[in-house]
Length: 110
Length: 113
Image (cartoon, rainbow over all chains, first blue to last red; front, side, top):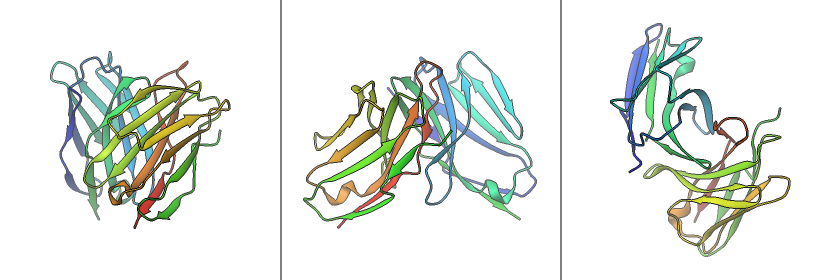
């Protein structure tokens, strides 16, 4: 089946690290994504990881992939108030179709 | 490059009417996908078009349809609107010849009264 699960809420202090976790079910997914959505806006692609990678770092963002457990995480270093948003994990099934989690609402407190 | 654009951004319709939404992909992207986002169901895949052909379809009734033009622009149509069709409709594009990374537009917010 196709299912992606994430915790719904995360609250951190400004300057701390945030870690958002996700589990997925499709072991054949070639790409896994993290998107950010701010109020009233569309989805902004933050980063992605190819299924043959374990880790990817992009400035303040670190993605870890555990294929055995089908677990994906996104770490945001030095979290800022501007990082407050909803973060979606998604897995690709090919032919333009992705399955998304329900999103994790990140609240950053000053 | 310009991003994915969607028109209109906001729309109010009444039950029973039909609606057409438009999406212009990033230049060079020949695949366009449509998603529906609602608070209750989250993000759900509607369909995908590539080179004017529907390649993939989600679990939506036949009232939801789409098409793609030779310039890769896409439209989706919803006929006989229901209250439950109120949602944010998102369009995404990617270039199948490069990598499977979809870029999203800002969405069209549809309210059905």
